[in-house]
Every structure is written in C-alpha cells, then in structure tokens.
Picture 1 (cartoon, helix red, strand yellow):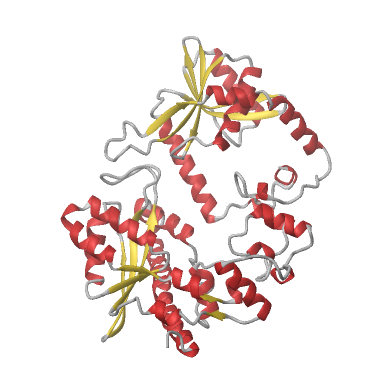
Picture 2: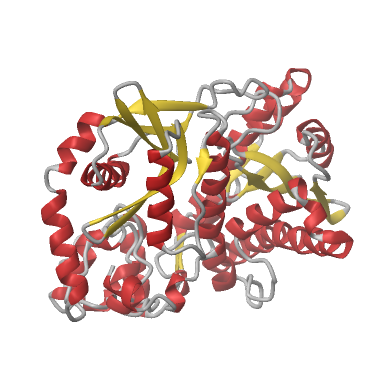
Length: 474
C-alpha cells in the first residue's frame, strides 16, 4: 500500500497481460450490470478530480436521482466509488459489482469501506449487496445473468473495525516505508505487485521453489537463514517430486527413475499430441454457455505415425459459435491415433466432454476421443527431475530443461493469458486490429499453440532417450 501511494509510477504497477485481462473483464461486467439496474446517472471518472466526482454525486443525490453509477464519496480522507447506488423508499441500496461467480470473504471489506464512506456522508444505507455473475445462467437467456446477494450483515460486522483500520493505514502512509515481514499474506487474498522487492531472488535452488512448499512456511525458513534448498538439514523430510528435487540439486545432476520406460509404454502408437487454447468470457456469447465458461477456440494437433510428423492447426474465425467446426476438425486430425497425448491433460479432457454435451450429434465420437487422451505430466513429475525445473513441472519449465534449444523465449506470444486476451480481441473486436493486425494475430497465436504440441513431440522423444540411457524397464 505504501509503495502504491508513494511510487505510483513504479514498474511493478504496470499490469501484466493476465491482470489487464481481469481488469478488462471487470469493466465489461460493470457496464453490463448497469443495464440490470437501469436509468441511472453515470458520474464521470478521471480526469475529473476526486473532489469534483464527489461534488457531482452530491448534486445528483440532492436532485433526486434514483440510480447513480460510480457514485463517489470522500470521507475522512477515504475515497470510494460505488458501482451502483440505488434509491429506495426508505434509503439507499449499495451495490458492489464483481466479475466472479460467488461472494468471497475477500469481497466484504470492499463493501464495508464503501458503507463507511456513505454513512459518513449522511446517507441511510438500508442494504448492501454484492452483484455477481450467475453460474446457472445460460446463453441466450441472459435475464438471470446476475445474482444480487445481500451482504449487509457481513459488511456491518466488518464495518466495526473500519475506523481503527483507516486511522492505522493513514498513519502508515504518513510515515516512512514500513518494515513488514514476508509471509503468506504476500499472496493472500491477492498477490502483491511488489513481492520481488521483499523476497529473495528466485534462483533455481531457492527455497521458494521447493515443490508444493507453502509460502508461509518458506518465509519462516528464510527468516531462519535457510535461503537455498541445498541448505536444508540432512534430516528434512520430503517425499515424491520434492524429494527428487532436493536430491537433484544436492548432486547437481538430473534424476531419471529406472521405471521411466515402463511409464512411457502406456502410450500406444500411433500418437497424436493435442493442445487447446480457450477463452472464458464473463458474458456468454454462444448457446448453452454459462458466464466464465472455458471454450476452446483454437487447437494444434501433431500426429506421429508411419508417415512422419504433421501439424494440424485450427483457429476460429469471426464471432460465430466455433464449436461445431472445431469439433469436426479435431476429430479429423486425431482420427488415426491410438493415444492422444496432452500436458495437464485433464484440461483437454474436460473441454472435450463439454463439447460432447453441447454437440449431441458428435458426442459419441468426441467421448471416444476423450477416452484415448493420456497425460505426459505425471510421467515427467513422477519419474524425472532436472535442476532447471525450478520446482515447477509446467511445460514452459520442463521443455527447455530437457530439450536443448527448444523453449518459448523466441516467441512474440509466450503465455496462455496473453493468448486468451488476443483471441477474444481477434474473435469479437477484429475491426480494431485492421486487416494486417488480424493476420499478425493469427500468425502469433498459431505459432504459440503449435509450440506446445511440437514441444510435446520433442519432449516425448527425449523422455524415451533418457529411459533408454538408463536401461529403464529392462
């Protein structure tokens, strides 16, 4: 908080593509929500000053406005902007809009601080609500897109400590940079943008990389002087991947389990390698979809058989429902494969089951395909460890560690969050990209999705090499 206020131009405050996509979705949901509490007056945001926004809100209230969007209030040095303020017969309803499917504990302080500012401004708030997306809603019927959940009691309970909290925070902001010990709070309920300033640099052998180690426990270890995994006491108890990680880092060598070959033999050829890219729009656009439903709109399939290796890329065009065409292309691409390999395959399996439910005329073929999908991740996790994994078994860590010269650093687009953001832009707002921008977007998306499947082809081959070198399964 101190850095956010005193270093407002800090590079850490520039949102990542993933965070920006969350902000964009939140803005869209906020705007759509206004249509469900209609005929309101919108108070302008920046470049208006906070004081001007609060003054305009007061004028709207005095003029009898029934609904106000982004109603602004300043009280005791605290500024709030209420998503929707609704006048009712006996007072006001405060409505906080969230682009989530449920009410969480982390949302209540947002409502409570707004309640504090409104009541300090003299408003009689009779109810506080959190308006969120309805997981039961299905396109095209969006009449029940939102749920308005009464959180008045919870907000008033949180309100009791608000004056003391505000005074404490204002005192901190007025002082020098506070000293705060690292711990689980650095990522709960939200990740701190400034985490790297406080935590040790994330080296490949850093204690924070120990597989499945909780952040709070890592902080205690660091405070006790254990910064590296190699500094763990000899009697430190670890099992599974964490144990192999410790052994690998202490020895400086990769760990290859002698059972790797047997694990690979479960993948019966001919093989196909599959990766989906999805979008999850908060406002559903295609039949039967719920808010935030993950929808595959792109795939890459690599087939490996007696005819060699061949890529089968597919990417949706336009805003029409892509699922029928995607399903047909996917079934064709994978037709000859006995085993279809994916990395973290439960994601692909879930998407295919959802496609089968949405496309009953293709359901049998899709479910047959789903039954042939197998996961490479458990094989990597349970039978290998390389020091360069850094405690992670993501493909982006494993691939460059095991396959020389093959990673993601050479790609213009190199992460799933950026891909999803660009896919939504390409499908729903292509006019803003222009013809050249559309062509470029399709090119970088195809390269990114293809890297996952081509990388998996090479990883699978490399695993067999490692198994052969160990005499695995012999």
